[in-house]
Image 1: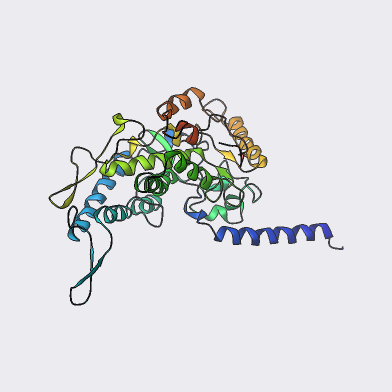
Image 2: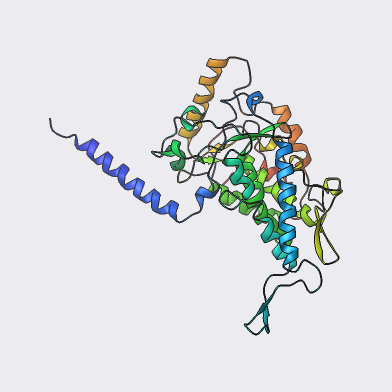
Length: 364
């Protein structure tokens, strides 16, 4: 039997596409934030609430970091680290006290591979629920829907689909903590340290989510509004560390300062310990703050997965998105805050339209 030339041509094309995709993906840090979350396959009642463990871990780790930084010079006047030569003569300055503080805190609050907290969580040192990719709502994904979830071997990656945890009674993916800590700090630096307008910061976040963070077929093919909410709330979290400015949602949301400078030493504020549940709300949940997809094919496959789950489980729980429009509006209310450069915050982090194909030019 002769080889079918059409099949051989298609195979060559697929091989070339894989090579191109691999080269493009190597140019961007997509793996850092590429995990997606499945809120449908496992009932929420089966996910363990680890709020107490997360907060205890966070506050204890901060105490360790502050002790290390204080041993290196602490804070306040004269706390800038000094470079010295072999004879002890000063020849310049490096980081100031706040820069060293944030750098140290990054050992705890960052993305996987950089964060002690996230790495320990992913390693199972705190309870989390793992859903195998092939058993999830993304089980039928192909490279045409999103390369990172559809490629051969994607199911073997522990980071393709984020484990589920419960914080403050709400089920979220562990990836939301990474967005809070990692991209939230990027937002914080742009707005508070560099003086960039809030709208511009949010626009940059949207552009990143549309390109290398998920929302195109070169990544997972999933544009995740819940990630955008986590990024924004992470900016709030970092602002509260020293609480030098009021919260973006209003003074009533000033939860810091978590850390103060007293007598030349950094100290935790005993009246205000870190509580991560203050930043987690229903806009972190991808079954309420719905995602959009890089292709109509992705939309169709996702909806087909929900239909299969609905047929299997009936009305035992909701298999739609959003699961409740009223709950979404209730969660969105606190973000309906006007920005100095126009518009409201909720517009940039909340999807009221449900699952659909993302528009790369007119979405916002």
